[in-house]
Length: 570
Image 1 (cartoon, rainbow, N blue to C red):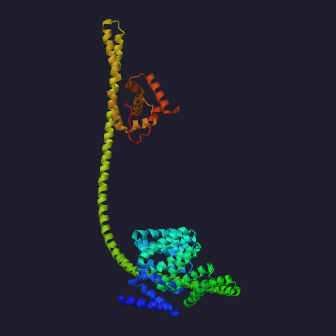
Image 2 (cartoon, rainbow, N blue to C red):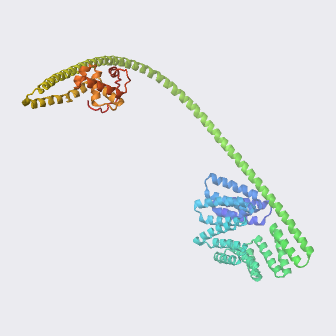
Image 3 (cartoon, helix red, strand yellow):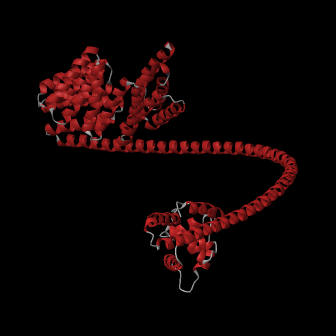
C-alpha cells in the first residue's frame, strides 16, 4: 500500500511537468491508481484534469470502471463513477447530462448513507445548476450541503460551501451577502489551513471589492490569493489572479504596472497552454493599450484574443465531437455486447430447452408405454369386475322387480280393501240415515197427535235426531278412507277452486264414488230439491259449461300427485 502511495506521488509530480501525449498517459495511469481501494477519494482532481484535456479517454476509463462496479453491485464505486461522469460533462458544457449523472450519484449516496460524499456531490451539483442558470436550485443544493457540514462541524466543507453561496450572491449583485458568506468561508478555511481553498476565497473577496470599486482592498485580497497560489504551485490560479491584479491597476489608471502584470499572465498562459487565460490576457492588454491611446497595439491584441477565442471554440467543438463519437461508440459497443449476451442467453436457453424437451419426450414415451400396459391390465380387471357387477345388478334387478310386483299386488289388494270399506261405510251411513229418517217421520207423526203431555218429550227427541244428521264423526272417517283410495284429490280441487266449501267437497266426494242422487240426498241429510240446488251452485263455482255432466267432470278430474296442503275439513 505504501509503495502504491509513493508511486502515485511520483507519477503525479511527473504529470505536472509533462505536456502532450505523455501527460495524457500519466493522467490515465493516475486515474487507474486512484481507483485502487487505498485512494478512491483522490480520483476527483485527476479525473477533472483528464476530463478537461482528454474527455474521450476519461469517459472510456470511467465507463469501464462504472460497468465493473454495476456488475459487482459496488454502489459506492458506482456513485463515484457517476459523479465523475457528471463532472466530465460539466467541463464539456453538457449541463443536462452532467445534472443527470450527478443526480444518479446523489441517489446512490443517499441509499448508502454516505453523508460526507453526498454533501460533496451537492456542492458539485449546485455548481452545475448555477452555470445552467438555475441559481435557485443551485442555492438549495448548497444549503443542503451547508446543513450537513454544520452538523458534522467540517470546517473545510463549510469553507467551500460558504464560498459557493457567496459566489452566487456576488453574481446577483448582492455584494453585502456575498461578502458575509466569503468572510465565513475565510474563517473556516483558516481553521483547517486549507491553503488552496483560502487562495480561492481571497480571490473571491478581491472580486467583491473590485465590484465595489474599492480597489485598495481588492488589491490586498488579490495579493494574498497570489501568495497562497504560489505556495500550492497552482499555476493556472496564479494566471487568473495576476490578470485580476492587472485589472485593478488599469482601473486605477496605473496603466504601465497593469500592462506588466497582463504580459506576465500572458507569458504564463503560453507556457501552460491555457488558452482561456491567454485570451483573457490579450483582452486586458488590448484594453490597456486603448486607454494608453495606442489603437494599433490595442487592435492587434484584440484580434489575437478573437483568433484565440475562435481556436478555443474549434478545439472545444472538436473535443465535444470526439466525446460524442466516443459516447456513440461506447453505447454501440454496449448495445452489441448486450445483444451478444442476450443471444448467448437465448442460445443457452434454447439448448437447455431442447435437452429438456428430449428428456421429457423420453420420459413421456416411457410413461405412455407403462400407462398403456397398466391401462390394458386395468381394463381387463375392470371388464371382469364389470361383468361381475352386471351379473350382481341383474340379480338385484330381478329381485327388485319381483318385490315391485309384489308391492303393486299388495297395493291393489289394499286399494280394493279400502274401496270395499268405503262402500261398506257409505252403505252403513245410508242405512243409519234411512233409519233416522224413518224415526224422524214417525216422531213427526206423533207430534201431530193432540196428546199434549208427550209433545214436549217427543219434540226433544226429534231435535236430537236432527242434530245427529250434522255430526261429522262419520264424515271424518269417510274422509280418511277416501284419501287413501283417491290420494291428493281434495288438494287438487282446493288448489284449482279455492272457494269450495266443506259441503261442496262432501257432495263432490259422493259424486266421485258414483252414488245415486237419492242416496246422496240421504247421506247429506237434505231433500232432492236441495240436492239439485247444491249441484247447480257447484257447477257455477267450478265454471262448468251448460250441457256438460257434473258427475262425468268429477269422475275424470285429474288427481295428480302434488305437495299436500291444508284443506278445510269435510
